[in-house]
Image 1 (cartoon, protein in one colour):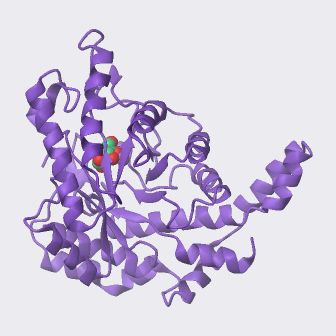
Image 2 (image 1 turned 180 degrees about the vertical axis):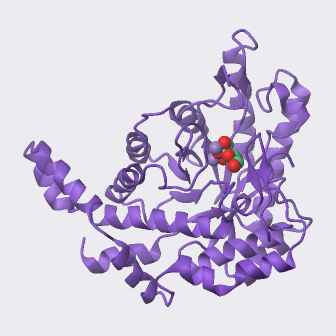
Image 3 (image 1 turned 30 degrees about the horizontal axis):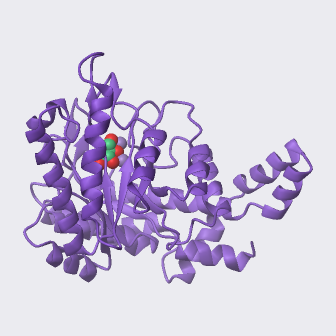
Amino acid sequence: MTEIAVRDALRAQRIEVPSWAYGNSGTRFKVFSQPGVPRTPQEKIADAAQVHAFTGVAPIVSLHIPWDRVDDFAKLGSYAAEQGVRIGTINANVFQDDDYRLGSVTNPDPRIRRKALGHLLECVDIMDATGSADLKLWFSDGTNYPGQDDIRARQDRLAEALSATYDRLGDDQRMLLEYKFFEPAFYMTDVPDWGTAYAHCVRLGEKAQVVIDTGHHAPGTNIEFIVAFLLREGKLGAFDFNSRFYADDDLMVGAADPFQLFRIMHEIVRAGALRPDSGVNFMLDQCHNIEPKIPAQIRSVMNVQEATAKALLVDAEALAAAQAAGDVLGANGVLMDAYDTDVRPLLREVRADLGLDPEPMAAYARSGYAQRIAAERVGGQQAGWGA
Ligand code: PSV
Ligand code: MN
Ligand code: MN
């Protein structure tokens, strides 16, 4: 790829940020409060707009319903536009209601299944109002003990709810199905892995695609293989980017394993899936329990940019030649040369081209925004967990 093409690709890159990254969050042991956190969905969007203002590549904000429920979603969309961003993916939430103790769409009780489906359909109504293209579905459904419920019957119930939701989607809307190998269910999860998500999506049709949340795999899983496979099948709809050391840690993407992030982005670049119109949505799904939230989102966006820049710098011709020649060390060397490149000077130039400060973290710190929200906002809210 020519240097101009690399710069163009980096300028055109789009990363979607989650509204819930700006609220207070924590673990089940303690939620720490931070000064200036948003009290309303509008304030979360205003904070997200800061991330875009300083990086130039994050103009889209995902919402989580009901955490971001408002009376008038069309008006919230207009508010976002005034802030210089737009509302993106709508995340459904069927995991925080007492009724869902034994599951939501896979619950043995038909009344509770109907309630869960009602929420999913309501999320599509919200998408209509916000102009969102993607509905993201993650189910906490599963069982804690062998024998607790029938595994196959639960799959039937899941398929039924997915199909009813799929039928409600508009022509330009998609359903993104996210998997997670455990938690909160500890014995069996109803959508535990990409294979299960993929099989449901294939049955549903073209508008159903798989979401890869990077934190939702067992240690040692080769995530870039999953990326490559789903891309080849045209079934990779989106990422939920974050980092993990142990379980679903939701730490900043690229913090735990920048090399893994590079390997993922290499598969994306190879498949031509980086372009904003590729159908792959690059979202963050993170919490910032102890670090300040807006800078943590800025840092995360920068980490994705760095991994992307390195992936774009891979010498594709040299790599193909080494692979064809069976040159194991040569091929690996081509990849490592790109990974070992310091791309920060290049990204500084890309930002300058966009009319931005080349150093987003320092520029945000100097802006005084953090001090202003700390003074203005009293009584900031929890991101959603336990709310
Ligand atoms: C579940 O762990 C998950 O990754 C899903 O995407 C939820 O919607 C999200 O976390 C909430 O942060
Ligand atoms: Mn996720
Ligand atoms: Mn998660």
